[in-house]
Amino acid sequence: MANDGRISKKVAKRIKEEQEKLLEVLSETHIAARACRKTGVSPATYYRWLEDSEFARKAAAARKQGKARTCDLAETALVKLISEGNLAAIKFFLPHNHPEYMQPARYSDHPREKPLDPQHVPTLDPQTIEEQKRAVGEKYEDELRELIVKGSGTRNESS
Image (cartoon, rainbow, N blue to C red; front, side, top):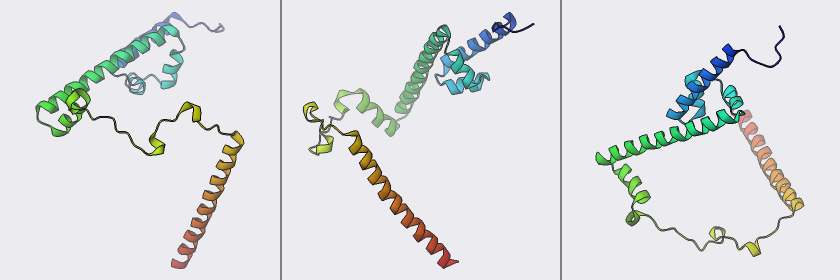
């Protein structure tokens, strides 16, 4: 009997079970590679399953739940370290969560750090860019040749 692209009910059931198991693990840890490793599903299979919009929707929801769980675990661990008097944890937490400890944005007078005025943004000619790339490449190619020649000469002298 020829296979016309349909899969048997037994295979469909097994795939559904594997997907459910993978979604469960994704909801615990949002990292797809880890979920695939834990469930024995190849990453290629996982990404192929994502082509199915229903599975993709469920996977996105599971990953969102897993990420929230991971963030909750991280916050719990951070609070525990703070309660133990860990100075690094305290120094990390306060500037990110308390306005009195937040650092003001620093501004520089250096021209590279100033935002560009959209009216004065230079336009770059693609030919000029290619010429610059070629010139830089040739410069480093010459320097690399010089280093190789020097290195091989030094090696021969010490032998």
